[in-house]
Length: 287
Length: 351
Image 1 (tube, rainbow over the protein chains, first blue to last red):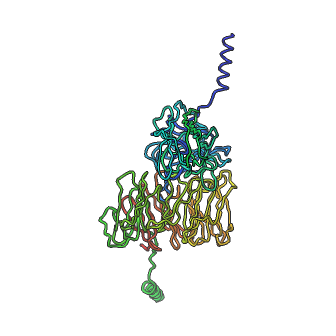
Image 2: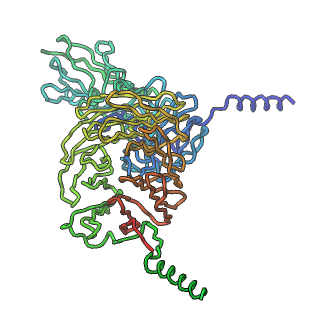
């Protein structure tokens, strides 16, 4: 009798605390993260590889817009896409590059977990994948979808290079031990992150620069704020500010307009799961 | 004697009607196929083109009387075409180029780009829409920038242009902007009266004095604005909730919009509504002086209608084949593409 009661108690607990499985695709393999470099704009979502993979809703939703590529209208870089809005009007979800004819134009409402289409290669895309975006409607922000989709990540980010540019001369702080830096040099970092089941290099979640222990700059790819028809990271950094060299995984950190002398430089890179990589070195600012 | 007189009288009356009043032969004015030619027939560039067709992988120009003048087919699945009657563009699926050609195949310019071209109607200018669909540039046929990179923070749902090269852009966040050729926003509007906020399609008349926006879900609204006074002329609910860029166009003081199984209109002068019933989803709509050409599709079948402006149906055909690229030639004729053929239809009398 006691065993039976324990069993019933355990089953009740499991049922009560059971966590809904959150999935947007059958097999989640992320190939590109939020705010990645895209030639002339931020990547506004995540990319997930997926040939013929089914796609699912995260919430009870209403279809607000879809594109099945009508022959005589706009052809979208997003290819075939569907935009859903949650019933509480808090979220909008954009699923792009869907396979032809997999969006059911007669369905206008979806329940959480319903299938909405199949990943494909339509539009500006070089392989079968899903581009997935989440917008917080009330805040007017695009949010990093990894906040809502759990991903296993035990690999810490990698620093490829830290370099300065002065009078268009590039000097690597990793390759050269000379730590004398001219005042007003521009400091850049090349770094990337990797996620457990993906071979792709991705943008890390956070890059912080500390000088003499004080946080000088932090680039956190949490949100893209919509301000005056432009996207901003941290409310003040535009695409051109961060990707000043117009290259992938290459981030501008700061102008070293410090008082000449020796100071401690620390750069910390972290991913969404808190794995960290650090670079520390004293530098000497000269005139 | 009386009988003879009656007979003679009958003959006179009969002769009168036979010889002096001709019998009226009933004639009915209908659309019939006047000409047809294969698009793969030999092209002769010496003739001026009077019609065209295009898809993602081909475009062709032809003289309706002399046949094909130019045909371009793309075999590479990573290259696409966008065309109108004046010119066509070839661009890469993920490439960074757009090649601009005249309608006889002469290369006008190669430009670098990270977007897809979109040619509004028969304009000699075109948009390049950024690959994230949240910005555009406006270029001339010669590849020169008129507006260089206008960005939004939402996906563009509809783009149109007037004769002064003002651009009307609507976005998925419910906003619409009228942007002049210097890139300055001169008018902005938003409908927030619906449960779901979205601007899905827009129209601007060629003179640029009126614009219309179709927006919202539950309910869907259409609002027409006077751009001389920047005021709303009318705002009305529709009986639909489109979730794509629905048809919206000004013609002859009417605003035509896509209804449920119909092409509807609002007469701006008479303040009246009307509709042309069609089956399925509207694919193409073309206007001439007093006729409206509509093609629609439903469950694998295509339908072709010609209506008079007064709502009389002048032509109706059903097809299980692929039909597309409708265009009027003049007041009483039009052409369309049926599989690999161009057909000319003429409105005339037949016995």
